Amino acid sequence: MGNIERGAPANARPDAQNYADADRSPSASGSSYAAQVAAGWRELSQAQKGASKSAPAYSRYVNRKIGRLFAALAVPLGVSPNQITMLSALFTTAGILLIALVPVGLGAGIAAAVLLAVGYALDSSDGQVARLQRSGSLAGEWLDHCVDAVKTSALPLAVAVGLYRAQIEPQWYLLVPLAACVIGASTFFLMILTEQLRLRLGVKGVSAENGAKPSILRALLVLPMDYGVMCWVFVLWGIPQLFLPVYALITLGAAGFLVLAMRKWFKEITALVREPKDAS
Image (spheres, rainbow, N blue to C red):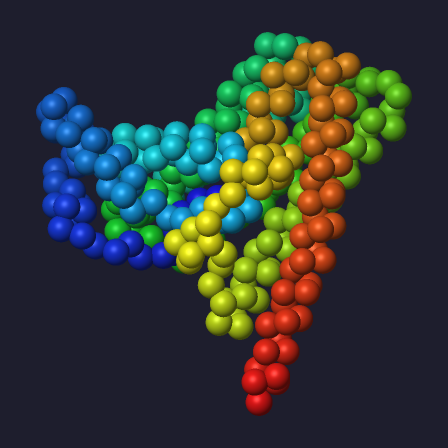
C-alpha cells in the first residue's frame, strides 16, 4: 500500500551502480556501513517512485520516509526484500494479536500502535530495498500484496474480538469493525482490480512520475483511508469512550471514500473501454 512496486526495475545510474557493487557484508567497518547507509538514502531520495495522486498524507510524507530509512539501514546488511516483507508481517501480526487477545488498556493500545506503525513502515521499505538491490520481482510483489490483503481484514476483525472480550456496551458497536472489515477488503480488491484493468487497457497508474501533481489538500482529505492513521488510533484503545467514536468516524470516512471511488472507477473503465470504438 503505497509501496514502490516490487516488480518494477529501477533505472540504473552510475552512482547507483557503484552503490550496488559496494561491500554490503555485516562485517564491514562502522564507517563503511554508515557510508553505505548514506548512499542508499541519497539514491532512494533521488529515485523515489512518484506518489499516487490520491495517496494519504501520513503514507506519503511520513511512512515513506521511515521506510526509506529502514531500507538504507537494511541493504548493507544483506537483508532481502522478502525478508523485510516477512518482518513487516511479524510486527503487524504481533500488533493484531495484542488487540484481539490482551485485555483492553492503554499499555496494550500503545504497544499495538507502535507494532502496527513499524510494520507499516517496513511494508513501505521492502520495495525500496528491492530498488537498491536491483532485485524486484513479481513473486516479491505478490508476497507483499498477500500480507496487505490479510492485514486489511485481520485488523478490524481483531478490533471486533477485542471489544467482544471486553464486553463493550452497547453490543451494536461490534458492527463498526465488521463494517470496517468489509469496506477495507472491498477497497483493497477494487483498487488492485482497477489498476490491473488500466494496465490491460494500456493506461499507466496515476502518479507524480506520470505527470500528475500531488495535492496536499487531497492528501489530507483522504486521511480516513490512511492505514498509518489507523495504526496510531490505537493509542486510544484503553479509553473506549474516545476510541469508539474516532474509529467509527474513520470507518464512515472510508465508506464515503469507497462509494465515491467506485463511481469514479466505473466511469473511468467505461470510458477507456469505449475509446477504441469511438476512435474507429
